Amino acid sequence: MKKYFTVISTIVEKDLILELKSKEVINSMLVFSLLVVVIFSFIFEPGAEYKDEIAAGILWMAITFSGVLGLNKSIMNEINGGNLNALLLAPVDRSAIFFAKVISNYLFLLLMELMTIPIFMIFYNINLFEKNVLGTLLVFLSGSYGFSVLGTLFSLISVKSKTRELMLPLLLLPLLVPIILASIQSLNIFYFDGGFTDAAKWIKLILAFDIIFTCVIYVIFDYVVEE
Image 1 (cartoon, rainbow, N blue to C red):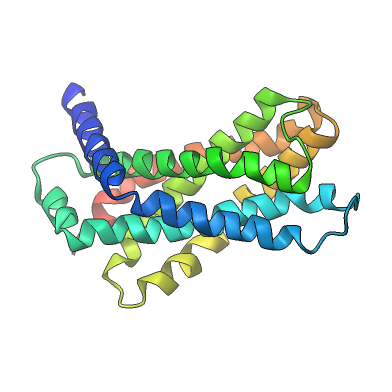
Image 2 (image 1 turned 90 degrees about the horizontal axis):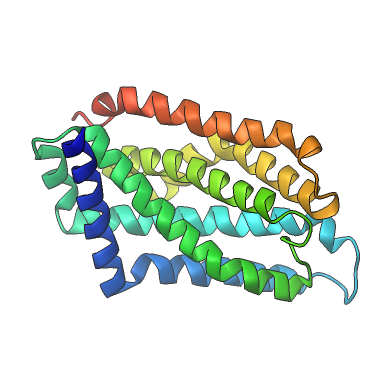
């Protein structure tokens, strides 16, 4: 078990060091997400109240599509350097490789959100954390993890395809619909009401999604990456 977690920490450390040097994944995700946020802010009239009702959807749309772009960049870095084949040939548990990539992508996604959300709240003049800080943080943390788990899996599945940039969103987005909808509904409830009672069913859906897919992928990952 100690070796398992050592493999994970080593790969995550490698990914973070490479990203600190290049900043390719984070920069591409951040630029795309900010473009979405800024462009959609232009469609609202000054002082329009209806913007509050759809703001969470716009934010998660920015997170989702910038996340897909980041996944493509991340997996291309592994392919171009020959790192992916080397990792799969290494005498280690392949699921450890998968979860290391999940954690790396998760950290990149959270860092992008950390920079995007404050700018989003300024442009849309709303405070998502005003009524329930813990609930809102839970939505972003759990929703982003679910995105990272499925996104990492399908980025590895589509990596051999010549049209990987097209295949990844086509495979990934339909399965992400439940977690995106649950995240949007939860954010709206926390923003307008602030209570956990109404949001509980949506939070449970996100957590169930995370747990189920984590367990399933842990079991099947060896078969997924077999050539």
